[in-house]
Amino acid sequence: MIRRIRNYIRTRGVGIRWSPYARRPQAPHEQPPVDAHATFQAGPQEEWTYRGGRLYLNNAEIEEYTDPAHPDIPAWCHLIDALHAYRDWAFTRGVPHFRRMAFAINGAQEKILKQMRRLYELQIGGMTLTLGDGTVLLNNVNIRALLAMYHVRPTNKARKFLEGMRSKLALILCHHNDSPQVSRVARVVQDLYDEIGRSLTRETIDALRLSDGRGVASRPMV
Image (cartoon, rainbow, N blue to C red; front, side, top):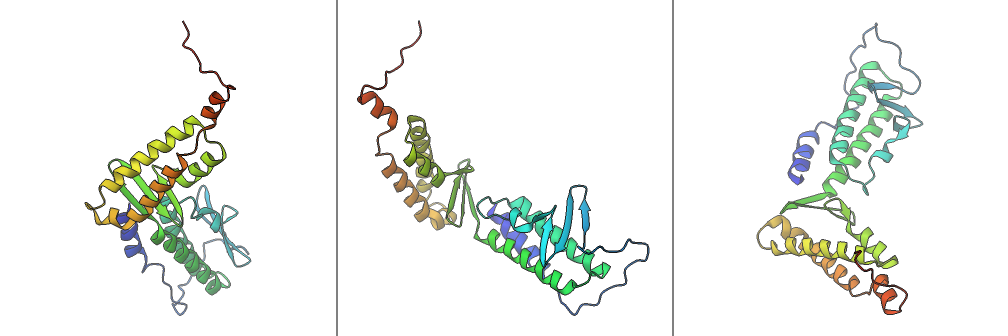
């Protein structure tokens, strides 16, 4: 995945640049006039508009589709291409205030590319580790969110899940010297491995209930 991100940034990075001095071609006369919001119907379920200096996709600001807490590389790649098409359409149709609109589009594309550069995804041993802006996902599971939940309610089920996550992190650390990619994230993985270990020293509420006599171990049905 990291190679895919690099290739996309390399091939599309030049494509997002636009010169305000480019010559606008004449728009065909048979096309309908552009409305006040520069509405561009890119597809059956994809409508772009530009209102009040901001870009909207299906009446939602574009920032709602680029939340770094929920990285989606395929969707982000599509957004960059769609914005490129929107800018080309607006340029061809002679949209009023096109220069401001083009700068807004360029800014949105650069922001998405910046987030893609910050995202690091590592695949090893059938596992996927994704790092980005403080978020650590292991097989699409947010480990820090899981730790926070365990601190609030440390159950046996959550403990077993954390133990499984810790074993997977240990497997990644075993490849520390085998791959340069693993070496780059080894410190983050080690810190997370140690953090889980410290959390597992806390006794679960299930064990506390049994020790206090408030819980009774279930017996198998005959």
